[in-house]
Length: 182
Picture (cartoon, rainbow, N blue to C red):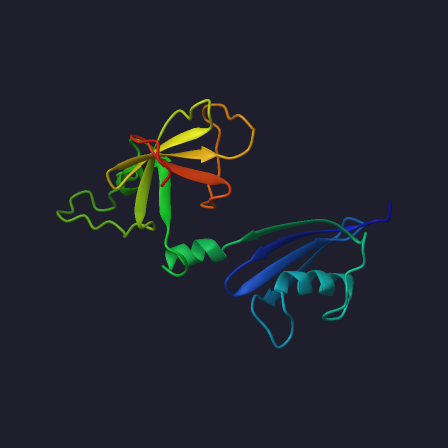
């Protein structure tokens, strides 16, 4: 197997940092503007090209790259700046206020008016646990009880984290009282 480069990338709102480890194990760093359409389409890919000595748009040869790991602060920044899509918090029943309550940190212990920051989410859905053996998760939102059936044949154990997406081909919503599909 030919020696390969490995890359670790942090894509931020302003800059993208690309750390490369060459086949001898030496680390190299590059910093590019995250958005620079006049120079390149994608900062992460261009950073890899720069490390490999390739020109903008030049194909990256197969077998030259071992692994690429990428993290981003873009989504976190979008939440903090209130940009992007509306956000829903899905949590275990009884924990709807856990983030609002927080740790009860009080920088000024004698303050008469405590001003809490605005929540990052718009609404909360509580999940009644545990999930049934039939892959149903019970939800209660806006006074309505319903369940979400997780598609596929896989069985989940209590405590398993499940990512829900609202694609009717994957999840179906049912009214818990009437069992009718919503």
